[in-house]
Image (cartoon, rainbow, N blue to C red; front, side, top):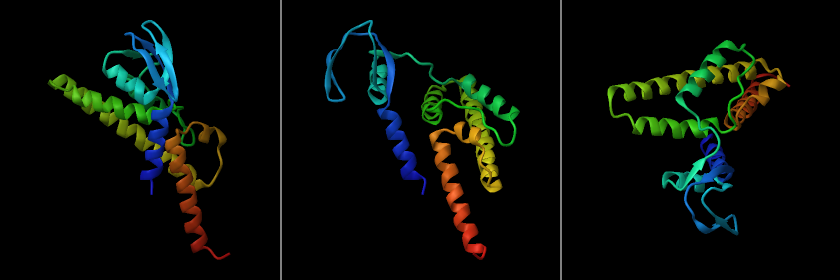
Length: 178
């Protein structure tokens, strides 16, 4: 039920442009149907999938702040301090970035300290997700519209919220006479 829509969200994130600094001359590169000359020292926007690949090759550097384990901890603390019907505003691509971050942290955990850091990150992330899902479910069950609430949802959470609303409405319509 959720798999395909979430896969589509991932594809959309990969197609979104991100700002990068060019570290090595690339010459002419085809990007989105155009041929673009890319030289060292430039800042350009490239599709995230291409920027990620070029970053791994040491050719570009992202110009926006990538998510860190400290960011996840801060989001968790902030989420715990908000009310039951409000959410902390996350980065638009939070879930996409946090999966990448978790993969990198786990892959680089070679000693006890880095393994503990990976465990802490995963634990904080699970706690944050549980808190947010709890709030989404509570608002859905209450059946009230809280505009600022919806504005604080990521696209993945908005999808969950809308599906829960539809499911609950359908369920109630079957139980209650018209």
